[in-house]
Picture 1: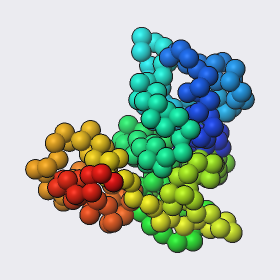
Picture 2: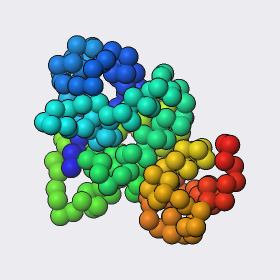
Picture 3: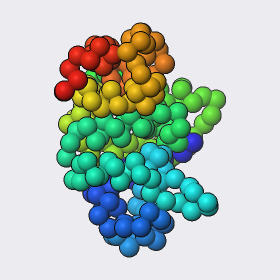
Length: 227
C-alpha cells in the first residue's frame, strides 16, 4: 500500500496527454517526462495509473491497459462526469494501492466542514497501530486535495468541497449506465440479486451514501436504463 504520491494528485491534463501522445502501449518514467511531466510528476502519475489498473505489468514490462484507451476513446477530453465516476469506482477497489485516497473515499459518504487535522486524526485511528510521520500524512492529504481540485471529482461531483481550509462532501450519484456496468462487472447478471446483498457486498454506500440504494434497485429492475 502507498500512502502518498509526492503531493501530486491525478490530473485530467496528464491523462489526456498520455492518451494523445503515448502511441505505444509500453510506458516508462522517461516516456512520461518526454510528454512534459517533471520527474516527480512522472513518478506520481505512474503510481496513480497502476492503482487504477490503467498500467499493468506484462512479461516484466509496464504497458497501458485496454481499459485506459477505452476510457479515452469514449471521452477523449474527459468532460463527461461518467468518466470520473468510473475512476472513483476503481479507486475504492481492494486492489487499489493508494491507502489514504481509498480510505477518504470510503470512510464517510457525506460530512460538512471538517478541517484537515480532523481527517488526518481519523485516518491515524483507522491505521493504528501503524504510525506515519507528520510529513507523510501531510503529503497524502496534499495528493488527495490536488486530485480533487484539479479534476471534476471535487467540486463538480461533490467529493471534496474546500472552503476556508474546511472540507465538505456531498457526492453526486453516478448515472444508471455507469452503475449498471460496474455491478455487472462485479456480479454478472444482477436481476436476481437482492438490493441489500449488492449493498452489503460492495462499497457503494460508503462512497455515495444511502441515496445509492434506489439507483441500485433501478439497475436491477431496468428502471432508468437510459439515464
